[in-house]
Length: 67
Image (cartoon, rainbow, N blue to C red; front, side, top):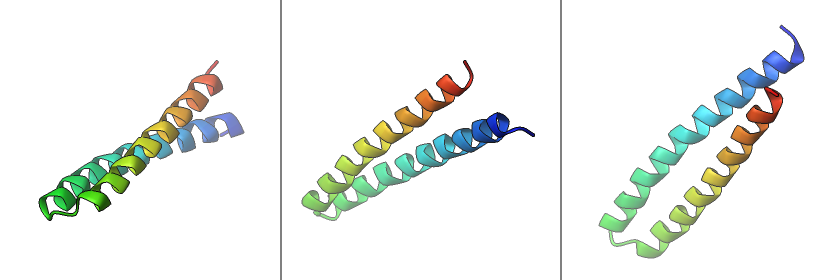
């Protein structure tokens, strides 16, 4: 397996990994809000946005790799 194929596999793994974490973070935000911890929930919500942006970067890297 050459480097580019390994890089594709790694990028796909990280994308999937981030997607799963984002789902978990979203559920945690809801739990924090239900517990009345609005400020903590807002910080985690902000982090969810950063995670989404990082996943977008990984998707762009994968797209560029396949060109």
